[in-house]
Length: 86
Image (tube, rainbow, N blue to C red):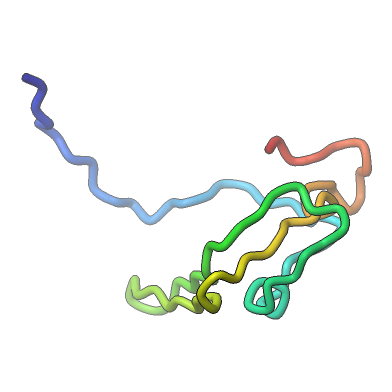
């Protein structure tokens, strides 16, 4: 039977790079459940704000509500031929 012998401490690094896409989702887009014509996926994940002292503030969507992520969100604003791997 396998057992966990070592637990790596959380170092706080959650991401390494960001690009600026042709569109950025706003809090209003998410909380209103906006559907985009060029939507590439559905999502219902709430807004997650990492604030002081490691706390997290959540802004949840209303029950049953979801939004789409537009294709242009994953296309670089300055280099149209390079996208974000999905």
